[in-house]
Image (cartoon, rainbow, N blue to C red; front, side, top):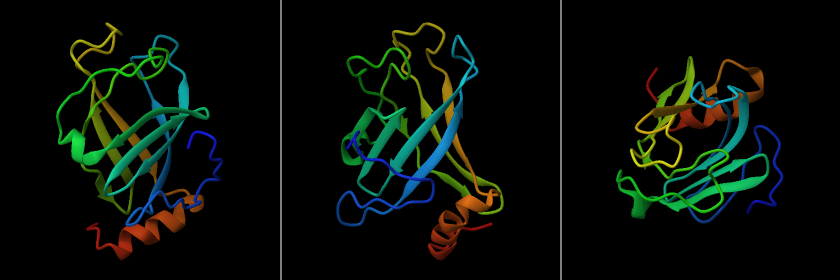
Length: 142
C-alpha cells in the first residue's frame, strides 16, 4: 500500500465497507525540528493506515487495537515511534475532523512519552468539499 499515490480528495477502496481517506497535516510541536509533516490517513471501519512521505508508518486492524496501547514498529523512530490507542474521530462539518492518538509512556522518544497527538483535517478548504459531503451524508452533527 505504501506505493499507492493519491491526490487530495481521492477515494481508495481497501476492502469492503472501506471508503474514507483523510489528508491532513500533523503539527507536531513536540518534534525536535518542529516541522509540519504531510500525513495520509486511511481511516475505515475496520482498518487504520498511516503513511508519511510515501512510507507506511502504521497498518492496523481496528479490532486488534480496542483502545489499548501497543508496541512500537521497527524503523519508525524518525517520525512516529509508537503505535497508538485509537479514539473515534470527532466530526464537526463546520470546522473539520480530528483523530486523537496517545503516545506510549515507554516510547523510545523521551520528548513524546505520554503526549496526546491530534491529527486534524480542515474542512473549510474547498478542496475537501467531497469529504464534507461524505460525513454530512453519514449524519454527522454540526
